Length: 249
Image (cartoon, rainbow, N blue to C red):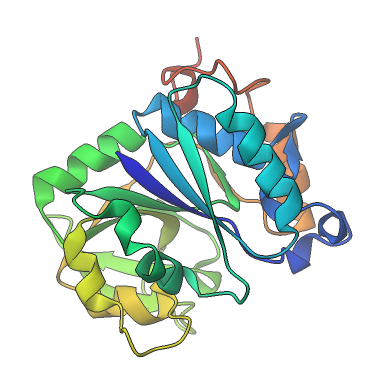
């Protein structure tokens, strides 16, 4: 299976850390966030990952090259963007990366998670929607994309950062999609955003999967410090699937 790992943002809310370190390489328990993501994806059977870069691409490129020199079974590719393409634009521009794939993952690299991606992919294949979106309950729904579900798990509404939220099920920044997704990314729109431009068009055609794993957006200094203290793992190169989705014995 293949995965997009969206990592090109500036990380402005993490300054001054991100003045010299790209957001996807900030350390969690002494290991780069990107390393934790690669461990998670590898532990769930992903073999190829495309990481987009823009801001401070050099250190990310060096990290990828170092990773690829190791025999991990996971190959990482860089897609450098001279100008940011938007989350939907990155997926659109790199369609050939997943050509022929029945389904693929799209994940935001500024989250820290041990979500059970194997169960997530299984859910998507069983439900057969254009896309499946990982969801979690938030206590700040006005700051998130909020979804409504029917009894079958179909997404019946989706609003990005609603002024008057009708629920607390929030977009977790992880998706499983099939080739049909490309029909909903406007080829004429510059820098389309998945949350703002694509997901609202998929209401009624996508499903919501609720993750029970650890999930934190490390995009602010407060969240980053909390995540670094809470994260229960101390390494990533030999982390197993059992360790990275909740079975911490």
